[in-house]
Amino acid sequence: MKGFEYLQNQLDDMKEEGTFRHLIPLESAQGARVTIKGKNVIQLSSNNYLGLTSHPRMKKAAEEAIADYGVGTGSVRTIAGTLKMHEDYEERLAEFKHTEAALVFQSGFTTNQGVLSSILTDQDVVISDELNHASIIDGIRLTKAGRRIYKHVDMASLEEALKETQNYRKRLVVTDGVFSMDGNIAPLPEIVELAEKYDALIMVDDAHASGVLGENGRGTVNHFGLDGRVHIQVGTLSKAIGVLGGYVASTQSLKDYLIHKGRPFLFSTSHPPAVTAACNASLDVLLEEPELIDKLWENTKFFKKGLQDLGFDIGISETPITPVMIGDDALTHKFSDQLFKEGVFAQGIAFPTVQKGKARVRTIVTAEHSKQDLQEALEAFERAGKQLNILK
Ligand SMILES: *Cc1c(COP(=O)(O)O)cnc(C)c1O
Image 1 (tube, protein in one colour):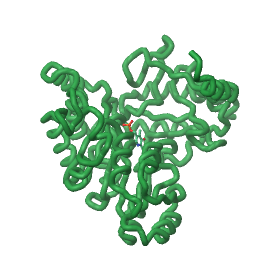
Image 2 (cartoon, helix red, strand yellow; image 1 turned 135 degrees about the vertical axis):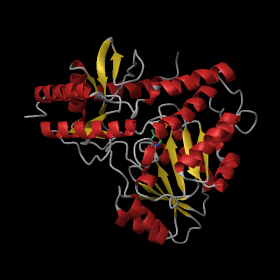
Image 3 (cartoon, rainbow, N blue to C red; image 1 turned 180 degrees about the vertical axis):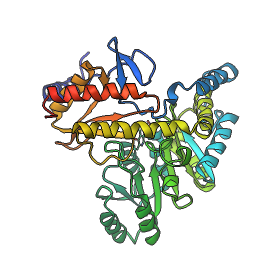
């Protein structure tokens, strides 16, 4: 069909530059080991931190919900698509997060869009870390609010932005709780102190911290003992929680406001029963099986130390997200391909997702990996690293 030549030209350019990507389908369930191109490999690229994508309790809850309530809801939340189970789950989630209320959106991405686009006007300003997630950036694009970007985790730069914006009605400081490419944790105690000093609101996106940091996986706010001092916690139910969705944990007034003004909430159909039931069961898992989080951290420490002992540069990571810094884009993709031949699936991440010269193979271990899996993975990293002269 004629019409899309202008797009195809750009795709051809990407192929020439080596930045064109194919999707890589899994031929098995997500897990510590997966089948890709007919080959059984160790999975080090998922966000399935606790292995909950196939937790038996959650699968059973989903199956029962389908049997009792069907596969869909047939409406948006605000018309006819709120099931009692949606509200029950939100109540339990708020209690878990130690907040007054919680509201679930279709995904973490739409949560950021819905919150940022609705609570700010041209009288307000949003102050955002330069490495915040794309969904925060897009949410900000949807507001008429002023914008200030501060240097990554740089508190002097944040304070400067706070000083410069004192004439606005409301200031909202927004940060990822854990940064997804480097695995570092936002300096929340300092951010909270500055925001309180300058009377600004704070929003933390805990997509990579929910289920990972804090007591029973309550997130970065709880991890730092800052319960009650962060106005808005958002997060995803699609990473460590293993299902799908996003949430806002905050006050009842913000929840009520978002029910009226959060556009993805208003104009996109609610979660199917299986999704909500599985998310609800994940709370039981987080509360009753904290050993999963212990295992995640034990595996994280083991794998990080193994990579460092081999001589790899793992950057500034403090969490299970462990980048293996390579630098060159092409070499990074080659390294990832070589790892696959050696039995490990670990995706290369290059420009434009990260800065030029900062390409890396990004790994995330999970609670599901055995010591044997991780030992084998380290041996594969050693062989591939030596073959490509990344290791001496
Ligand atoms: C993954 C991610 C999201 C998006 O969450 P989804 O539920 O996958 O849409 C939002 N924010 C951050 C920081 C993320 O890492």
